[in-house]
Length: 263
Image (tube, rainbow, N blue to C red; front, side):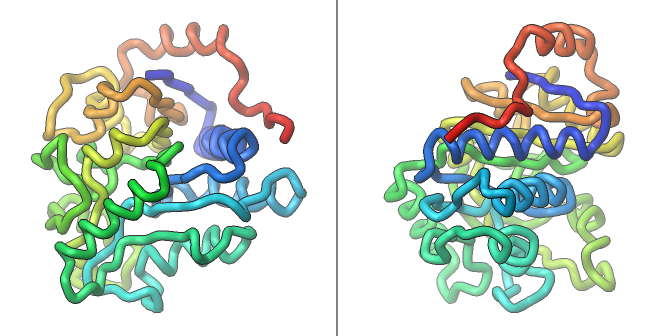
């Protein structure tokens, strides 16, 4: 796992955005896996800036989102569907027919999950998956105890996740308790993953995910099994890493990921 440590959250987010941008430049018809929540906001803002400056073209890109709350439709301002259009899709030239999000209001959730897996396969798999991490170490909504071979499915949210996500709702009791999420096994089939984490509140989860044992109690730790993972962290998220100096030294010899490639 490549570990990149930046001075602050903005710098980390811009680095993640540049890695995604270079993927789009190298392969204009690539398949991107995208995440929601507070962490990727600046990353998406940078992608929008690069698009508006004429440096990126998303017209042939296909996207798949990690998860969606059960019971919230696309028009609900708290849905991840609404989040993605408000913070990214409405501001770039991605083809709406190439945008895929789990359906949290499907009449048959099991069938909808199976169909989502099929659509990912039909698209040729995910080239680059952007991930955040929960304070309990979860990726997507794969809560502690999730199978490391799991596929897209219905998942009950842990109380810690409900508490963490309550800031996005008017009242804690409005936070959905169920979600549709890509599984850990689905995520591990992506060709490359970016794990973006910022803030000291993520430090414990990050230290366990990167330097701890591989365990279903921290589903992000399964990324240690993946051959192409880049963890992009700010100083706060990296603060508890035992080998921090080693990562900084190794990175000093690596190509600068912030450099934008030519189309």
